[in-house]
Image 1 (cartoon, rainbow, N blue to C red):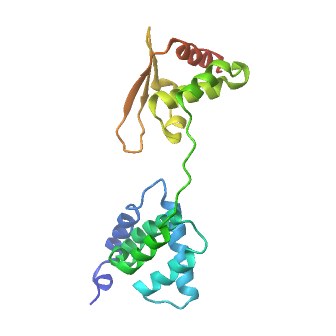
Image 2 (image 1 turned 180 degrees about the vertical axis):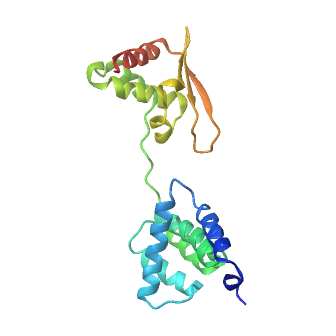
Image 3 (image 1 turned 135 degrees about the vertical axis):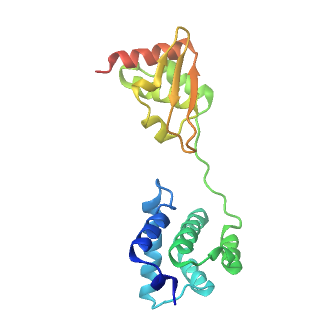
Length: 201
């Protein structure tokens, strides 16, 4: 008797909900999109069972379309979804890993451009406050707190505390779920932040 037929429907539903919550909330849609794309490819090729040969074929096709960094990302998402939904562990497929490593050989990913401290100071000093005040404040807070994009957009007015010689900012929602706090002590930067908040409705 299979586990499916031995399990009452209500317990199966609880288990399915538990399994779907294993995917990262932020990227669940992307994981499921990648998994569905793989499923459609399998259905179109009349593939019933996922094997190493199936995965090799799939990734051989994908490597003609995507950069190595994207292939590894697809591999990671499929590994997670196949393990959860099909009970298939593709991390044991050594030939597949060898294919991905070979594809990555000699690949140099593009490095993100980052602002140097000198460029940050130049922008804050020289850019017109009438046009760029909001951008300056975002840059100051992001730079001082090493904030991610989502952390910046989640900051609320009550997360900002004005002291006599500093502005203290609390980041309650972080990627690793550990709230953090930082202070801005540069007097010019404090004045810019206060100017921005005074202009807000």
